[in-house]
Length: 136
Image (tube, rainbow, N blue to C red):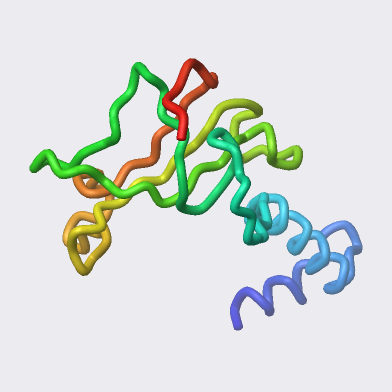
């Protein structure tokens, strides 16, 4: 209520209420709007090892290992994004592969509700270049 009175009573530079609100909305959009990439899943059994996918055979460089939790149990591959397959964006790198891994051996699927930032049972890995890798 006080804010609306200030906007009504403060006639800065002769701007109308509508002009002030439109300016506020434009400023808000610049600060609040985020880039979004829409992903559509399709059934395709012939997806290559380095292509974007949910589940299936994943990219793993010969210099890397499947991630494990603090007990040495392997994490489960969830998805990977080949950044070169994405539309132009300011979210992901232009090249490389981003992978998502979770621990599938419990009900929580890698979530730690007491410490949500913990990576003990989940990982996000980024491989900046595609190198010699294991095949299917």
